[in-house]
Length: 179
Image (cartoon, rainbow, N blue to C red; front, side):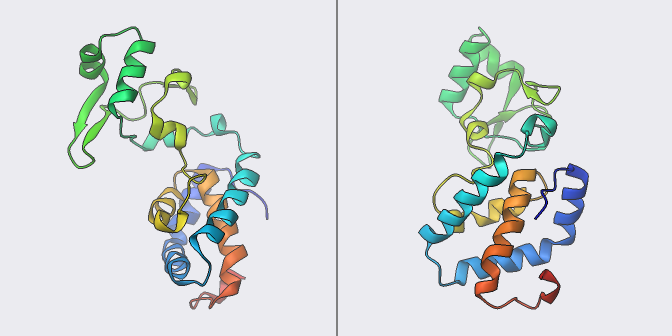
């Protein structure tokens, strides 16, 4: 299966496949595989796909995702930028009441330059962890993955391969063209 890396095609295909992606999410939630077994497949696919994709060719996550910054992220970034915390907050952050944290005031990320993070060694934990496919309990975070299919080439390709590798073990959920 060829990797798709063009973000415009990824957005278009993710939109076209939205119903199928949500149906596959339902399949994953109800299939006979344990969360640990699903994690094993997702982690292997993530390693395979992410090793072939150069994130600096895209940078879309930094353009559209708003990471939630915790206090330790703020301290680390302020220290890196040699700014007092309150000055860093005033210049770069706003409260996100919904997520109970801070987010950057603007998008794309103010530290993105030519698809590269200018504060990479001090980036927020959410950024360090993105696209979160290495974490445990994928089946309980699959909504996040479906949402990120249109954002990240790694997520898109992992999810497509996951459908290919696992859906055959259960009903096709009325999507025969999947084959």
